[in-house]
Image 1 (cartoon, rainbow, N blue to C red):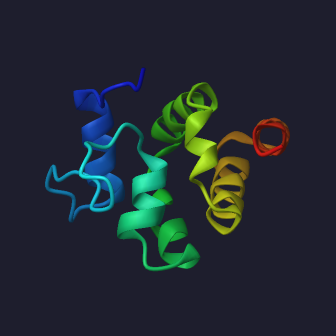
Image 2: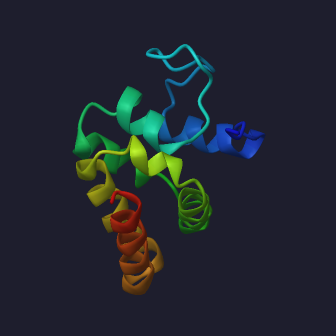
Image 3: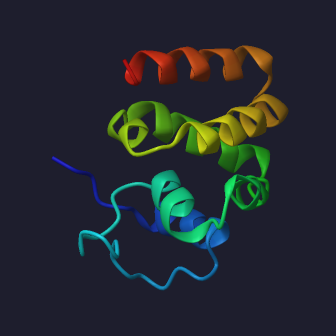
Length: 112
């Protein structure tokens, strides 16, 4: 069963995509169940815009986002590699090399 976005999730989504206004996925008509795939797939114009958006998150929020992303394996299915690379770099900057390497290993296993 898909999770519903919490108020905290929605507040982070509004930081990542200020243009977010509570709408559903334009493709499926379903409400968003994750944070990063909608930002990458619906709001960011390209990988550098995605990077700019995730750089808006402070270290604490980057950690929360990383924990959520690791728990939400389904998110990897719809997350393009170019966007993942930007996330990986942001996590490296905010949380260190070891954390970024763990994220990369998890991503590689999830995409197999």
